[in-house]
Length: 470
Image 1 (cartoon, one colour):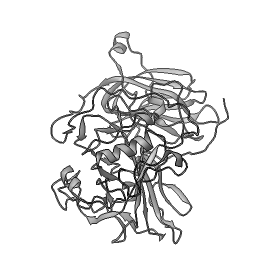
Image 2: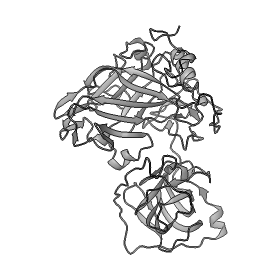
Image 3: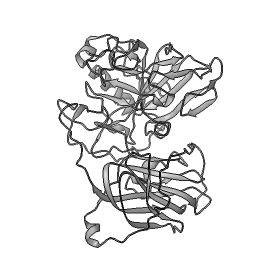
Image 4: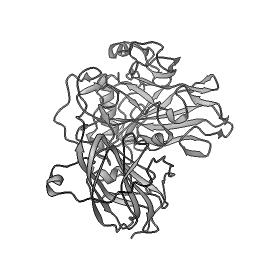
């Protein structure tokens, strides 16, 4: 086994597990007829883990169908890997393809809600290799819960395959809440290509939108509570100066902007930060990155006009925020980093920062969905899933608030720090967004809001000194 590094590890989290102690179920044998009726349910589905060993060994690598990628955990017990099947399923078989670092003792567990778990298989004599377990259970979530490692390393799975039958029909993709894209983008196959090496090397594929607060402390949310002024918790709005509960694409396009780029009339908003009962407003222009979220940055297309979505959830638990596929560094202040809630204390004179990534794969056919998320998805190991094949820019909020010292009374209008979330409603001038996307994202540059890369000045800029198309 190769020597392993512990860089970029995540702290394992405690997980409440409701397991009936006496219910330790062994593997059962299925007939060939039973096996023939089951389907691989886990491939490409969202996956979470208690920890990761390296940035290159994420949970998603164990459900990507690729035997050359893997999930690896930290070197401690217990650890777990969980897959969300999307709806309740009858599970009939689980296949674990272990790397040399395998589990000697582990359980396979199911859950309806991701919190209370039931054992459907248990062993203390795991042998590693490829283990095919013919088992029986039901649940939306299935996980491997490892309690004893066979080696001094962590747990390492090339693939975690769950077979069975979904018990519910897929959710509808039309009707109330679904907003069709006109025209839709169809016939797209997610790119699995790896861009060729460049000289000098391509290390970034992004540009910035620098936007100031445009409207603050307004209890409106035109995505979640459209047409219902005052129905939401307080939000801090950036970008478009007209955003309110009745906002539409047309009203945004007719409005002004607090972004440095005149062509960006998009609306960005997040829960208001409070210190006690006093609002804390971000000072100056905040950084909103537009990046490639997929490996093949050349395949990224600009957002369609009117696309909107919500990133994160005000009801997230700390575990969900920590393991969210869109988190980058969580909260930081002073020398503190990777905080999954607002720190209790920040060095006097520092500021509170958070970074959080949005999904970057679009279904190509809807501008919104009933939960404001289903039309978007996160890439799986750098590739968009087949049901969300269109790669679009990956937005990353990098917010900063001027608050420090004792942070005991600092919270969001939505709750604790891990309730942080944000909304985006695209109203860019289409030619401007395309120019920045083509030049900076597809071109492999690290651009400022003009589309200029100071490290590669010979490549020029997408916009002129007034931040408009030349």
